[in-house]
Structure formats: C-alpha cells, structure tokens
Length: 219
Image (cartoon, rainbow, N blue to C red; front, side, top):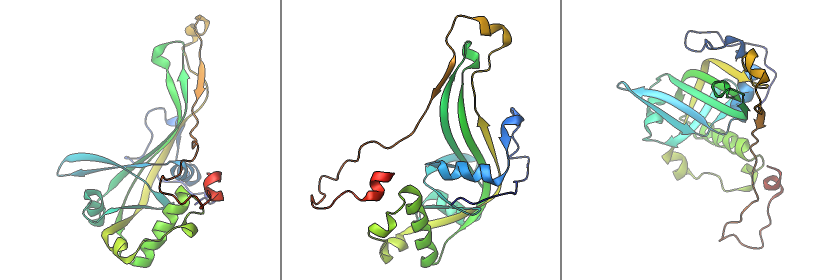
C-alpha cells in the first residue's frame, strides 16, 4: 500500500490540529504510513443524534479505505447511504514518564480522517478488497487459503470510503517538565512500547502433516 506522496490534505475546520499544532502533519505520506501500520480503525458516526464508534479492520487503496461486515450492519448501511464518517488510527510508541505527574504523556502517531463512501456491488471488486485485506494482515496468505464462495460474498458487504481530509498528530522524545522541575530527585524518561506476535499455536484440529507456512513464521 505504500507509495511516494507529495500532496497534503487541506487543513479543514474538522481536521486541523488545534492543540499543539506543531505536532500536526497533513502530508499524505505521513498520514498513509500511520493508516497502513495501524491494526484497527475506529469509525465514528451518528444515527438520529446518537453517536457510535465501531472498531473494524481496514485496508487502504490509494485514498480509499475498505471495510467489510454483515449486510445489515448499521455502519455498512450508513456508509451505503453516503453519510460522512470519522475514522481514527493510533499507534502507541512509548510511555513518557515525567518528574511531575501532570507532564506524564505518551509518544504516539495518530490520524483523524473524514470521508464518505459507497457499497461495492460487483463481486470482482469485493474479491479484490478481500485480497487487499488479507495481504495487509498476513502477506502471502491469500494464495494459501480457501477464497470466499458466492454465498459468502452475497452475505458480506464491503464498503469503500474516500478520505476527503485528514491530519496526523505525532509526539516523540523525552518528557517536557517545567524548567524548575529538572532538579527534582525523580527518575524520568521513556518506556518504549513494541507490538509483536507471540509463538504460533496450532489449531487443535490441524492435520499434523501440515507444516507451518513460511509467511506465518515471517509475520
């Protein structure tokens, strides 16, 4: 999903970073890199004044994001009608421990994006979206698994949401205590956060003759 991007999203009223604007980024390269690395997307929407936020897996294709779910899903039906949604993505990189508790923070990379979309109607488009999703989660798996049947395609909806505007916000570095607190006798620093997969666990009903595929050992 990565590509060289030079363009920037507009600093719209809804996407502009107002709190510590120096941490805001609007270039597509930064925004897309965070979206691609995030394991989950949280989609916010409102129905008759009631707000909802739904977690979902996602994959990016240019400026479009694909989501899938049941045909009767509230989120799917809302996007199908062309409603605007808010999508957020967050990667935590570390706990920032300051001398003063009020300056404790986190190092993070986050994106807030807005857009609207439509339901994919053609089976070939849905199948392509499924392949992109599979390749994002486990590169190599699509060529080594059973693909959706026609019945499964019919009962599963896929929507494509076009990103209209977006902003990234990033914090890096050590704690930022007030100048007078740097002499206090308390430890301060950063505890890095790393996300990784653990040891693979075979399905109890897996045929013992089937080896672990190389792409699973590489994730």
